[in-house]
Image 1 (tube, rainbow, N blue to C red):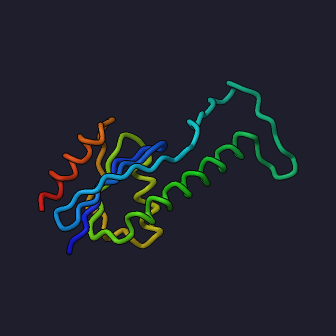
Image 2 (cartoon, rainbow, N blue to C red):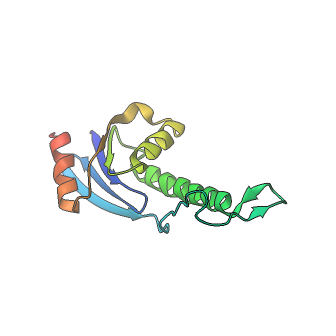
Image 3 (cartoon, rainbow, N blue to C red):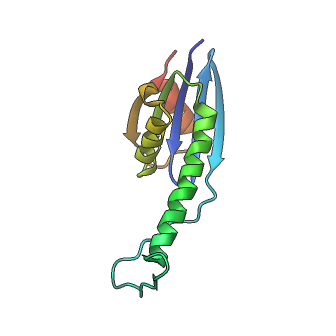
Amino acid sequence: MKREVGLWIDHRRTVIVTIENEVEVIREIRSNIEKHVRFSSGAHSKKFDHSNGSTAEDMRDRQFGGHLNDYYDGIISFIRGADQIWIFGPGEAKVEFGNRLKLAELEERIVGIDTVGKMTDQQIAAKVRDTFPG
């Protein structure tokens, strides 16, 4: 009984397609993270917090990173039992998630990490079926 998982991921949502015993299940997980805005230097005044030696931007970055880790860990809880995991998506999230899988000691199950643009859920499912033809 082989369980194959393909997932399209970005920082806002993940579409997980699981194929097991020729049955396909599609799930969506939303991060509920607001868009992360980075400022170029000089674009705003940096307020320095003397108590911990960081700027407000540094604190926002750490908070965003913490939210992402929680989001990735939630996804891992859904796919932990997979025999094979294929990750794809448009931006940095796919690589970040791949690194999170390594921390969870699931690295050997990753069959690929690929860059693709925005897709509908049906396009994602078709791409996963093509990758894991059965």
